[in-house]
Amino acid sequence: MTTAALRSLLEQKRLLVMPCCHDALSAKLIQQAGFPATFMSGFAVSAARLGLPDTGLISFGEMLDQARTICRAVSIPVLGDGDTGYGNALNIKRTVREYAAAGLACVMIEDQVSPKRCGHTQGKQVVGFDEACLRIRAAVDAREEGADILIMARTDARGPAGLEEALQRLQAFHRLGADLLFLEAPRSIEEMERFCREVPGYKMANQIEHGLTPLLSPEELQRLGFAIAAYPLTLLQALISALEKALSDLAAGHHPQGLRDFEHVKAVLGFPEYYRQEQHYAASDRRD
Image 1 (cartoon, rainbow, N blue to C red):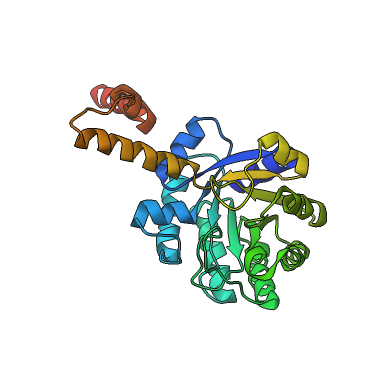
Image 2 (image 1 turned 60 degrees about the vertical axis):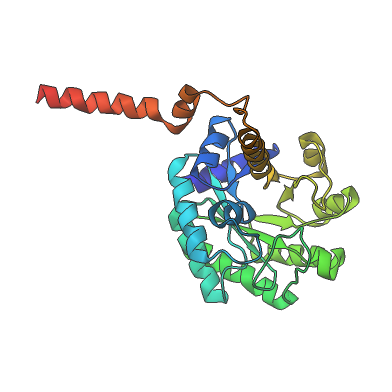
């Protein structure tokens, strides 16, 4: 159902603005704010769940568990970071099937050497062209064999191998049947424009504050030809900023200002609906 909803959103030909989540609460807030989809960011999950950097330290099982929790909390389509697929072609097929079973609408598979790392940090490397294509072919095969999920193919080749190699990989990924394409860390508007012009299919822009890629307005991203604008760290950055400010205030002997009131917090978490159902079943017991 969520896969069909994501396809429908893409077919509307309007830029899909997509804040990224790291847990069930952040996903619920994204849905409550009116956004039609979200993305489970590997960087943000590693930070929130483990308190560790996005350098391949989080496991397949931990990411899968987080995906299940997030998908149960919302009804909007959730895209998910599948990293390198967690092994060889058969591992990749399992990752795709398990992510689909967890409720994700799309899984992203990339071409970094394992253990992978955030695409906007130093030291990343990519596998060879043939190995990169094999990963996407395995993911597409899993979809064709019945996994109800879209495949996003990502390349990190721009940094270690150059833009031409990255574009060749993305063109090959499209021919192999990937539903969405993602060029990680283009360095200029001109590179983003070439990506949109020279690679067919739906394309995602990764908008990281203070990252390597230019931050553009939604209107400019749509004009260039992007289908999705993802904001992978915006909520995590906002969370860290707010927590640090509150902790600083408490350490200085002041009560933090600007906090949402308790009633709002309860409403976000679903207490009113819980109370409604509680009363409904209490009334049923009395009738019985």
